[in-house]
Image (cartoon, rainbow, N blue to C red; front, side):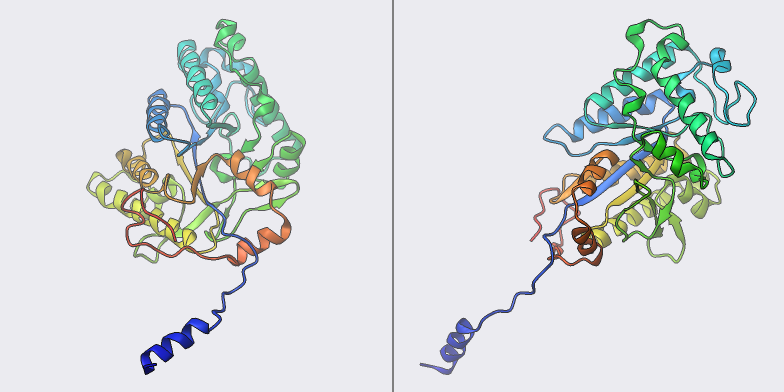
Length: 353
């Protein structure tokens, strides 16, 4: 036997030590949500976009945090009174007409019927940082009444109402991400399941506090920069352009957002698989540059192996099925990590080893 063969034979007899892991590798969840949800053109666009993405399977579903004033015309504004506010007052506009309300309801019913989620963004978009639990409860009650009675409130036919009750809405995001100590008891008492009003580091898994899952936006670093922002379009606008729509910067800022989101994705996908959480608005900040970046990001990652772009309720379902021990192992990354194929983000057909 030659020396080379002796070495090969010895290696064949060697017991290879494979590290023991606490759990199997989890999917990479990506939760993408929209706030306010006023513009009808955006409902139409996202309906068509998600339908194309989902032609070959459940590739992406969104969560929509809809403001309650979208369910009421300006002519009927006196039906709403926010906590400590004059009757009929809101920080954002009511619907322009009953026809607009009816069309929005139609889009919402269709989107929900195809797997997307409708959640609450309160009613009048007020800053609730000083609100008591009773104030929040008043706002939640108003939201439910506006949703459940949308047809009658706007002099529409009964068939123009929502195909689901307000009691089925279980998710919340506070306007301005502004919370108070009174919010969380009020959310729990009103039957909510999760809140998305706070922030956290990007590699943290969600926690359940006071019976509510906390799905928080991520504090992320801009691509190739020392600047930090939240995983939300308006926050990008502030840190990149001081809150101004500067046309000369649109392409640069769009590309930086896309690369930042891809950095966020890759760090978690090849790390401890903490869910990605991204929040945008229907309004086209920065001339639509950020919306374009988000759709490109979705096309690049949703549909990749082991990636689930889901609603927050679906993410809550997954979280509810975990033991404390499994969740702790996920947080530590105590599972076999995915290796990084060079073409991972170039083609949806890439494989994960």
